[in-house]
Amino acid sequence: MKYADIKTLPNKELVERYKEEKKRLTKLRFQNTVAQIENPHKMKEARKDVARMLTELNARRQEAEMNAIERKINQSQESQEN
Image (cartoon, rainbow, N blue to C red):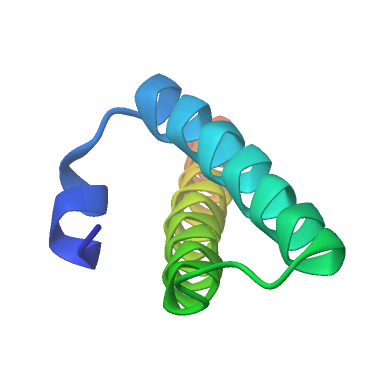
């Protein structure tokens, strides 16, 4: 999944896909431990997809936190003016 596609997903769907991809990666790791999987490149793709999703989730969380801080600052400035 490309990062541009990930950015367009709503938060709820992004979290669901992250959980699914994390499970898929775990399953691939177990399969690889038991017996060599046919296409080890799938593990690399899954790992990168998980990282892309986490990156976007963290960016959204940080943006929400910054917006909350800005609102708090604006409210305190307005109350000081009154």
